[in-house]
Length: 223
Image (tube, rainbow, N blue to C red; front, side, top):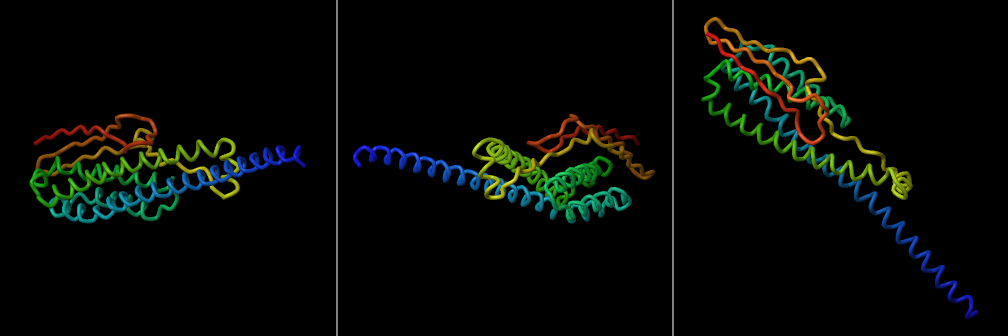
């Protein structure tokens, strides 16, 4: 009996060790998955804030530039696509399209100087800029959480626990640069005003994970 006791103790320690590792692995998968979900919720909060700012911004611009109907239609269509998106990939694509449409809307101020002194427009523009910065930050945090989860469940024992609890690989929130799609050149022409030619040029042509697509706008004013 005495000779068996050490063996039982060793076996008991092994069982406890395995059990501890199992619990630790299980908890880690759950924790990483919850981090991804909470990070995505923060991204959606900021995207929704941007979505909610758009109607007031459009109405303010319409008060000065009602004739630029094609711009307003483009924003409305992009906003509708975002509203109907369900998966992360769909929302990422819709958010990118909405960002481009907003860029065209804001470019109108180059053709209508009165917008640059309109308090409502300036306030909404500042709010939108702040929201874009927060979207960028939260998107970066979300993608970091996705990377942590995906890296863990690709290995052992992470993949085993992920299968056991039903956790799947998460999707990155990737924002495609406008270099990957045609971006129409926008011309504002009015015989009673200055005319502005606004061209949106993508700064880079790679898929971005950590920040919003950035553009350089060339604006020329002619009498």
